[in-house]
Amino acid sequence: MSSHEHTSSFNVKDIWRVFFVLLAITVVEFIIALAVPESFMAKDIKNWLYIILTIMKAFYIVAYFMHLKFEKINLIYSILLPTVFILGVIAALMYESNYWLDIR
Image (cartoon, rainbow, N blue to C red; front, side):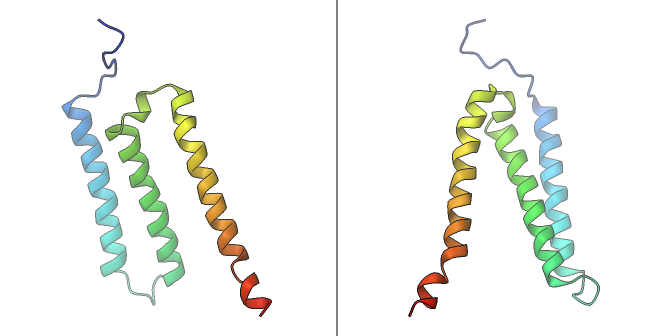
């Protein structure tokens, strides 16, 4: 075996398992969107559930289909840390965005 071959045991069975996990999460999102009335669950709670479920789907896509689950921790950090910093900058800019309106 050469050093460039992929050594994970990711097979067709695992692909179907990930597919059904992603399908289940999507079905839950659709049920929340279409079948749960706002009198039963507040819109803010629904939005937070959508965000959490979307992050779960993104994890599965990145971990399995982009093969990051099988990579070294340094490669994962090289992708994860810049993403966290970019999200932090976006959050800081959104927080400070009213400053320009306040000084007028």
